[in-house]
Image (cartoon, rainbow, N blue to C red; front, side, top):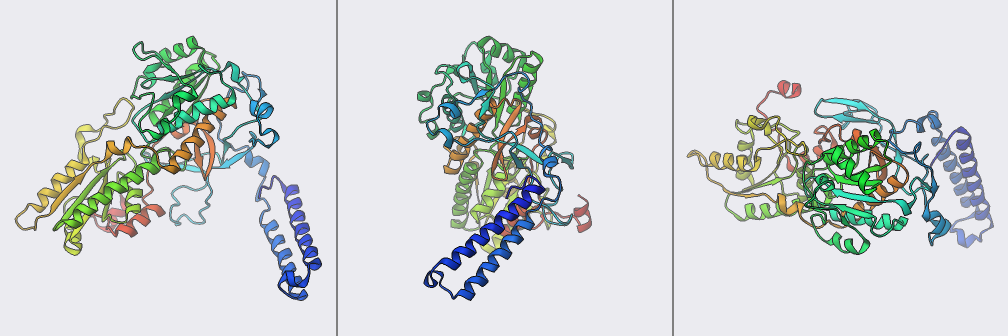
Length: 533
């Protein structure tokens, strides 16, 4: 129940009481048989309705100044002082006319939907609207509200003058084609002229590459691409020479740029927005967060994540079949997750066949009586087989040789933890004092990246694509679109790329995983040392 102030709260209570009174009058006028009870029972029920309505209305009273709270919104860069508004073509010409739904710039989406009553409550790492920077181990307070995504009645770009560019950056992820298609469709629905939507080839460098010039994207060009993995436009890492990109944008008359990328791609979008602002060039730069690892801050999840988990479950189930069909079988599966173990966690939880799940956020010992290898040994003795899932970024502290090194997108370069564990497990069970095991290793990484999206991701991709185009026409720039608390909203790019989102090993989801796998802490530390870490 939306309550914009105390006056509205009183009005809401009065309306609820009037509604209850109306139901009381109707109940009295109905024949006895239609009520299914006697008159006294009907009056008693109606009084209960009145009491309940009054209770609901009272519980909806605001705790503070609602109007003041609404101003605590995440600050998003925009072009409102630079451009003039025009009526949305949906409002003027759309065949659904007045039935078309719109949102207001006064609409808000709550960043946090949960209040922890105690610091000891599970998941209470940070209180209120804040984000947890796992790298620095600090809580960063943020605004309580975000701008709601959606079409506005008044827009800041005349669709007839729009020239847009779409680019995909970074590694492959299920859903890239879905988002490209959704952006192209929505731009043409606004009335952008055919031929004025460009697809930039092979990442940021495609803006200025002579070898791979941008291509025109029409509805016909993107028809059916949602049924294919990969990206129609091609992708690459790096190449973010902002001066060259800005030159290309101005020369081509581009005034909308849609960047589909992860932390690196969105950081590039933010840099491009700043470059356009320095040049006083009015261009809306909007990001769509792409990260198969689901490591983007604030938002509920990234597109392609559900599909990745679904495919991860298939790999785990294959490992289970191999392990359980062999005498003393061990199945080892490596899944994606550079800094965040969400795919390994969710896939393990969904499979129900995993005995050990290892993620970058948790430390574990290989050797020792409480270490991983001895635990695998005990599970095999008890069950006859064992299934281990490891995220690619787990246990990287054992590899000092790559510390501080990054790829072209700024991601840390990792050693192959899967092969490392495979060798360690094989060596452990090859000792004369131990019984041998039948070890199978599965790495489905590139198979997962290349698949078509599942149903939920297809819908989510289209929602994000529409939200990105709505944001550009609403005059926002330097922002990204994502879902928080089931509502689509806009966020400043600087916020969501400030740190990688990580699994809260003190939270409920990780506790569910521990309950499902029944894995111990896998540390040889004393309790005091463990708590200190």
